[in-house]
Image (cartoon, rainbow, N blue to C red):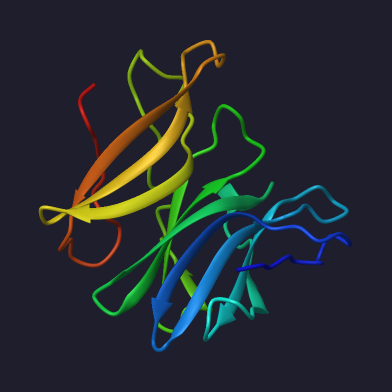
Length: 176
């Protein structure tokens, strides 16, 4: 697999998340900043995992996304693509957002975004680099955060019941 987005004028794509959905592979990735410095999330598709075509971007629509979004984690649940991604440029206030798609390209953002930021004395409240899995009828949201001084990066996990009614997922931080 080889793919690079040319939006910023140089070949670039990072933080890839790939799902198989409706007979195609969808790649969600962080695309380099525009001239204004904002990061975004690009979307590409493939039928063979070798040849990719950029088909769009996740638009910056909500106030929490004003400085940018990136680092998507994607999962297919109950016939829809769920995208978990971070706000950008608000350190240490960056947090995890959620959106859902019926076609893999156009996403409906959770009205309560951001949906998750860690709490407690063990961290500085930042949540970035979302990744999600399903285990034992729960959705596990893994994220990176930092210690209270913002010096040491750490991993955290939060959960939600898999069969939450609609949006938002009720995400609870796991006990440390």
